[in-house]
Image (tube, rainbow, N blue to C red):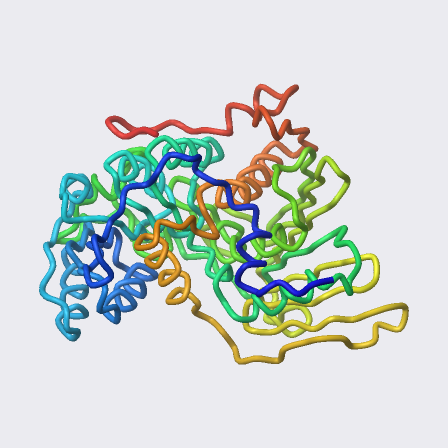
Length: 429
């Protein structure tokens, strides 16, 4: 079999959807022009993206957008340490979308804001880097795909393993055929999670536009447990551990399995068996996704363990007819072949905990070249769909039969209602 350059293989194999034959407008008139970028949500991961943007000489950081003035102040300090001029500071993302100087936006808000910002940004002619998971509920993912297609805009999902050396090298091994046909893959997130002691509601911190922070989520008093960082443990704002760390590993499991549709059957078990405190998601989950051709993708959450699997807190197993591969986004893979599990190709690598710089660089390169990204809206929807379908099956506590083409549960009206959610006015998707 002829060897395919790893980057071309990865792009080809992820199932990236084309946006049609219509030309996408050119952002930069010449290689010397800078791309105008706005960072929306600059706490946590968003601040990491901002640091990476400051390293780029081909980028102009036009605007920083966040609802917390203290977060904006930290962002200004980060930009001030670089060669970049001081950006505009806003709390309302709609000001960003009205600015013709902004070519692209980097969205790293809580999950419930991803699509309500990304879709109008696409409509406004902005390319979008959207942190994982791109959607908060299933139907948002389809709306994101349609918006990108309709407005001929680029989307890059924040599943960072799409642009790392360990993935490119593992992709070459998969393409070589030494594992045979990949029939089943597994993703896992095995580490010590946490709950929180309940806290009373409190006054909104000074400098925070709390109503904008809530956005499409239900109106409720401010509570520190539901604010910075720990919002992930609540369904109003986040998608739990599966939608956080698990999104990366699910994406790799689907990539290696080679499936380009949604599953047809979802089976889930989950419970809370160890963690104490306030959290709306279980501390363990076992999920099985069956595809039309019979292939199976497995996912395991074990958030009560201080140890991982095969030495890694986050990882994958790719099972083929001739052998299998253990893969981790920490920079490792190892192939085992035949009945005796003899070692094949591998990479020990360093512990790669942050791969965001390469993923963001890929997005910016595509903004300039107008080539399609390797984790576009369709790729994001197929991966995030697993998060949402698994959550629905867990909450309804039954096996769910799904129609990948119509994107509905044909015989389950209750499940279909959970494909979307209520949006607090005036926000919607």
